[in-house]
Length: 102
Length: 394
Image (cartoon, rainbow over all chains, first blue to last red):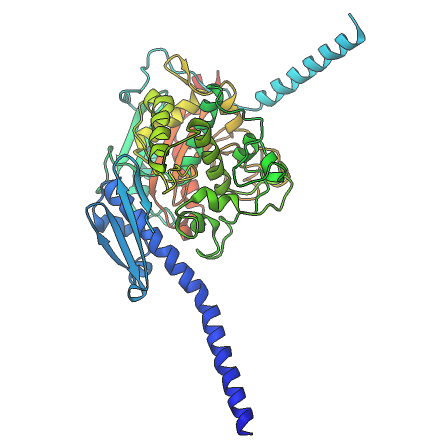
């Protein structure tokens, strides 16, 4: 019985991990795409359109922006999420606009 | 005269009749009034023309810039051109006439123009297969002509309008997901589920691949991605932007490819000049910029069994009803002749030949509001405030 209990326990743990990974797959993919999106579009908003950062922030759903940290540099924008586990940088090149760097 | 000659003549006559019939269905494009200068340097301005419903126009602008009308979102720039003159422009708080805003998919219409110009220059044959270095010569997609890509009847399995999540959307994935560093490479790998030339599906990747093929035609052997984009941008300026006096900012991915399907930044006045190029049938200040028939190609639905709302790089008014597979008609009046460049979040360059009218609206209308169709209703209200022009119906 004790051996069967361990087996059941392992199966349950594997199943929970699998379900968590499956359920989190979209969240991870969305976080990745979301950070690149905000980094690229905020870069263009700042450097191509010439809008201030506060104005650029109105281009996004405020709830979607909450978990993101947006940092502006002299030549681009870096955005991170999930405590830095996911991040994206976009670079501005005069005459050619912005593009994702990583 | 031999039977063969008579048959050849009959076929030629029949074909020309068909062409004339097809063309006859399109509204005539009004010429530039002789007393109105072309706006290459700056827009000539004028008062609202006689016959405008000022109350309706004022109400529409109040709704747009007051941000209280449901479903419109934030309107940032509006420019209205009638008879080649700027008759109304308005900007939201924090925006101005010089500010370049994002085109999103209005860039597709610019790509359509660039392909036409390259065709006129003899650099591409739009009736020949477009091809891509990622495909074998025997691949079905390698046989698809340029025109079919521009009509979006290529048959690619591409998901954008009906995507349920960001992670599912090929639009997001190509620009900001796995395709972000080499957009054309992502697009070239998508599968095909319909016979080319039979089924319409909104396909931004098809336009990315078109931009890629065009860039290879213009810059065949670039030394580097930076050289590729610099040479392409130079050609864009010499062939189109400088000719009509616009200063847009196309953006480029890390491979040096201009995105083609999106991400050109320009102000509303410049988008209006681009609209004027189409309203004037590809002519600009005495010079033919687009090939003859290229604007008609843009505003004629491609061959497909499922759609009547898309021409080539431009959205068109369906012959009847509100459009299939999407209700996209902008009700500009009974003439049903409008066509438009359209972009995500409510970017529009609307061209109405019968009214000699162009309306540019740039702004931020969130996806949930776009689905209500309110912004299209608003554009229709603005257009219907203007009368049919005598010149527009010549």
